[in-house]
Image (cartoon, rainbow, N blue to C red):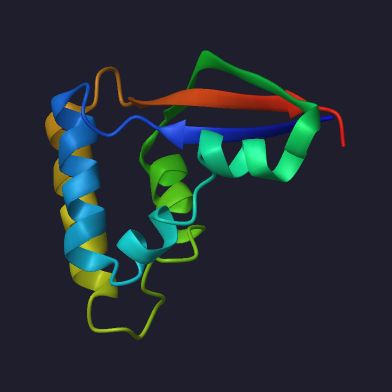
Length: 119
């Protein structure tokens, strides 16, 4: 059995650092949700004596602005329409996108964790 988790790299590029700062500034639940992401020790406990290990693989997504906007708004921690931080967050997202887009696109880097073992 395997548990697969994509962890967004938040500090490799200026875009990634600014996007992470946007999440901290506008998404009140972001830190709390991020704390629940699987860690190797938790996965080893989950698999128990059948724990096999972990593999890390590079992964990425490339977004135009509408894709990036959709990615942000699909996150459970993003303030929804009507929340006082919603519109300012989208304005900040547009600023970050315009600053870092190349050929109308930005790149999200991920590290894909594959935890595996037997139950």
